[in-house]
Image 1: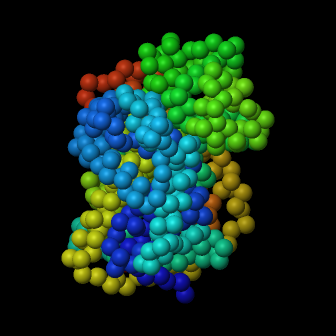
Image 2: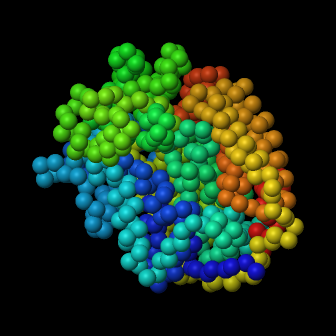
Length: 540
């Protein structure tokens, strides 16, 4: 018998997007927030740089709007961008009202400047902004009696109910409890996907292990369109060290004057862009990638030794402390860095309220494609987008709940009658590593038609193997995540093969110029059962 939970709103994901949506819902609404691991394990907690918002009289929302459009390389939705930048100050005020104290300088907010910004507008709490925001939102959620936080659950599949011959509505989700090794059923009148991005599809990433594209894959299998999946942002400066993998060196380091250098100490960014270290992330990442391949070196170096020690200690205490643990004193030593997969700019296609193609299903944060980021996300716009869309989605969900009767669907138990325990989990481990390696090699910073074709062929083979595994064996965490990553990888390659140009984060040697017609890539959900990989009891 399947263990069951019941709630008004199920929020899958406990980062800034998920928690902010829960906090903004009315107190009479019952909310269950699921976290894949600990509530602090997601990407929000790792965000170092800050939140971009116009809070200075010398700055303007028009300037922020223009900077975002320029970074997005012609693919931003202007209406979505204006919506976010116009609500930036309000989002900051909401955080301040919850007790967050952003850094100040001479009694004024200290604003740093990051790549692609024309003004210093990034508010921060030293270099641990995300950590403070995550802790504050968790504390606020814990104060709300209508919000229940549930750790260590992995969403498996959305549960759908047919409301007409053509329309389906989400009525909950099946989730896996690894500790108990069982699948639970959560019935909900509305579901919010806030599961983050999918950068774990790549071998090298700044993201935590939880970022396996779960929400993107589940929504696609359930019938939602995806958009701009080919645009994967590679952060230029991830620490290159065997004892500290996936540790990000904030873009704010370059914003405060850090210089990129080759092993001989020479600078190189001036050869790629007049903005040098403060060019947009796609340009800086490609420049580093080019120099590494040209010289056959393992990494480049980010140097802040010209900055005053006091300045480094004040603004980058987390980075300083972490690197001291592995023997690097950034006040004296340059930092070895390489690009790493960092942010999924595409995702589940949504409107201004976070609504997807399915009734009662919302997507916010990195899992969603709002149109704000276009072909390349402007630095520190991600936390801003999370908070603005979380509030907008919460307002729409509250309205929808108030005017929509509860359908009370009869949801089937999770069916394991036709499957057995597997004694071949080593297959999952091998397939997982193979996927991440060929995605890095063939669908990374620089692409070609041939590389994409090779990746597509390997994805089709893995998809068949995982479908076979999923059909015959009981699920586990590795199988759930690998299945989702394969769906995500397929969507990334589909988008990249369709785009016959280089734009933003998608750069291909076969079409090195940007085309004249800027169009988002929109992928309809797969129709073939092998592509869907969905259990028969997911539609009731």
